[in-house]
Length: 502
Image 1 (spheres, rainbow, N blue to C red):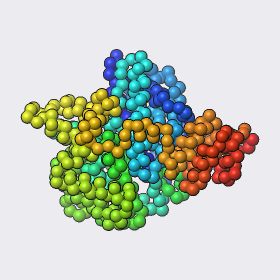
Image 2: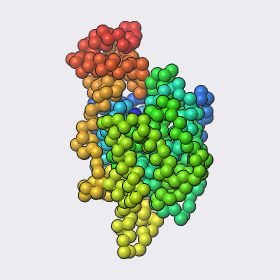
Image 3: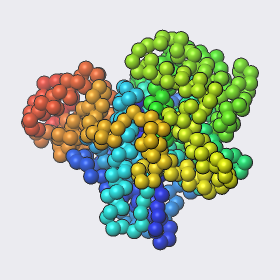
Image 4: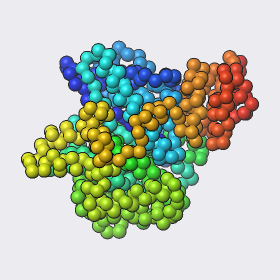
C-alpha cells in the first residue's frame, strides 16, 4: 500500500497573480533533510496505457497549469519539478503546481499512517523555511482536495492486485465499495462545485465527490473516473497490477487514513478470492454525489438490490469481510473500528467526531451556530480550510487533537522520525538505505529500480523482481557495507543484481 498526496497552498500578501508553479517548486526545494537523492528516472513510465492494454491520449483540464509563470519560466525542468527521494524511500516533488509527497510501499496500515504523517511534518517544515527566507508573501500549506474555485487535487492510494483477476469483475465489485466507503473516509467540505454545483448544498461527506464524471477511465486531472484504469504496475507486470485509487479524500484523521487503506485492502482480498458482493449501483457517479450531499445519511439510490442508503451498501461489504475470518492484529482492528463507526453513524454521527473528519466539521459548525445566526458560505469555507492547515497556529484539527476531542495514532516526534526511517518489511527499506548511505553513488532511481555506479561500472537493482527475502538480504548488505567497495562485493555475492561492463 502507498499514498500520494498533492498539498494545497494558500498564498497571502502577494502583489498580482501568484506563480503557483514557482511556489510549489520552492516548497519542495526548501526541504532541510539530508541525505537525499535529487532526480527521478522517467524512462520506464507510461501514463497512457490502461489496464485493458489500450493506449489513450490523456484529457487535460484547460485551466490546469495555466497560472502566472512569471518566475517559474526561468527555472530548468529539474529545478521546477525538484524531484527528491528521501531517506525513508518517499518521493517529494512538484506535480501540477502542487507539492506532492508519495509514501514508499508499506504492508501495515499503521506504518502507512506514520509515513503519511511524515509527509505532513515535511511540508510544515518546508512552509516555515520558505516563509522565513524573505520571499514575497507567505504560503500556508493545506492538506485538502479543493481550492473552492472549481479545481481539485488528489490524494491517491495504491494497492498491489493479482493481474490474473478478471478486470471487469474487479471494477464491478469494487466500485460500489469505493462509493460507499466515503461514510468512513470522507474529509467533508461545505458547498458544492463543478458541473453539478448546487447552492443549496451545505456540508458534504466527501471533498472529491463533486469531481467525478465516469465509472472507469484513465484520466486523473479532468473527466475523472471513480475507478482509474492506468496501468503502471511498478512491479512485475506479468504478475501484478497497481490499483491506482484516485477517488479518496485527504484526511487529517489518522484513523480515517488507516481505515481507508485497511478496509480497501481487505475488500480487495475478498475480490481476489472470487467473492461476489452481490450489489451494483445503477448510476455510481450520481450515487456518489447523492450520498456525499446527504450528511444525514438518509438518501437512497437505485441498486441491484433495490433502493439502498449509503450505510446499507457499506454494510454489505463490511459483513462480507468480517465473515471471511475475523482475524487478529491489524485485521481485527480495522474490522472492529469500521464496525464501531458504522454503528455510531447509524445511531449518533456526532459520536464519530473524534475519528471522522466530516463528523468533526459538523460538530464545529453546530458549536459555532449554537444560539446564533447560521454561518455564511464564505465563513463555512474559511472554517473548512482552517481544519486542513498543517500549521498548528491555525489548524482547528490540531486544536481538537490537543483538546483530546480528536484521536491520533502518530505523535509529532514519531512523524519526524519516520522521515528518516523507511518501512522495514518492504523494498522501501533497501531504497531508503541506499539513499541514506550511498546517495552519492546513485545515478538513477524510480519505484522499480535503483541504478548505482560502483567500481567504474553500472549496477542496476531491479526492485520489482526481487522477492521479500532477497530484499532483506540486500538491505542487510547495504547496512553492513563500510564503503562503496564493500557494497559492490556484497551485491556481487548476492547474485541478485545486474552489473554492467567496467
